[in-house]
Length: 168
Image (cartoon, rainbow, N blue to C red):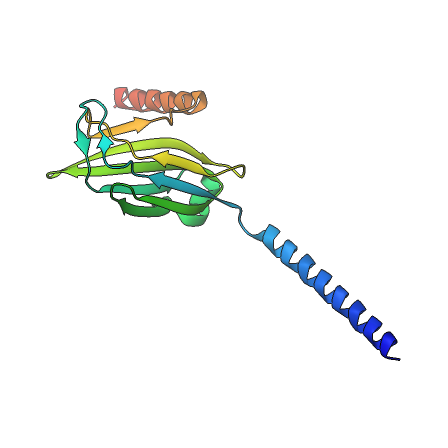
């Protein structure tokens, strides 16, 4: 009788464990897939391209979504922000998709910003960025050129506006 009871208990225990594992696997698939985005401040300073000067102050970093589905869910504002000092880094777990990362530094009352577009988070591996700055302009944009379709639409819209102004 004890062997029969222990066999029944073991069978029930095995069933309960397999049911629990099945439920956990199903709930993980329903969750939004995420990947790490790491932003690192070089040690000990940043060499600013264009001037060659060294900067070891605070860098303000922010991450903006570009993918329409992420914007729909989280809005178009920054999805992550922070301040970095030399040798620091930020690591965020963000939904898979396309982002724009902005680095900003304050020099006196002026703010300079470097924008990296088309930062793509994929399931294969984390994306790692190193802070970089440019001395030549207040705002520098890297990547993110408009597609041919977007340019065509923009030119068409400008042509309509010009015709409307001419007809006035």
